[in-house]
Amino acid sequence: MLGALALALIVAAFTDIRRRQIDNWLNIAIAAGAPLFWLASGLDLWPDVPIQIGMALATFVVLAGLFALGAMGGGDVKLLSALALWLPPTQFLQMLVVMAIVGGVLTLAMGAWHIARRQRDRLAIPYGVAIAIGGLWILGLEYLPHATQAGGLAG
Image (tube, rainbow, N blue to C red; front, side, top):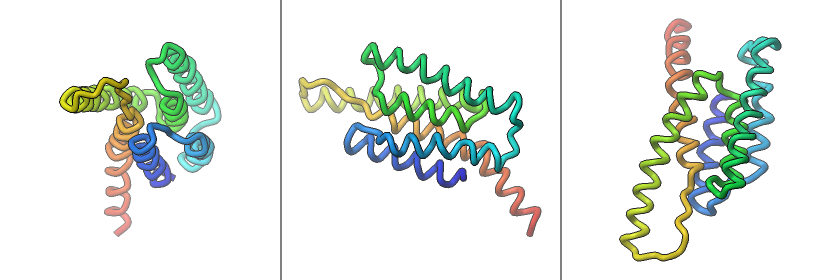
């Protein structure tokens, strides 16, 4: 399940780089996979599942406001909201911090490139890249060590 999520995040990053768009089918697939992950990981129906859903809804409401202001793309809003279904609150906050740092570096680098090329059109940042890196960072940090330990104990 986590491998599928990681692959979906990579696809989201690449499509955002190429087309500045994250497809709805990908966001739906990520969101639809979350309940299967909850079941496989033993998440309690109460209060854990409502917490995940509430966090995703709160994420969507806040980011939809940013979208309305033109500060964020719609695909980014949906991707972050879908990702909120997968990560517990603490991990989600950690992911947001990593995403913000990566997004800031990405914005500065693309802004410098934009200026160096003397382009006058509006700069479009593929923020799905920052979201994907933040998500992959947390997946690697939180789940890879456990998989390695479990494999070492089994062998």
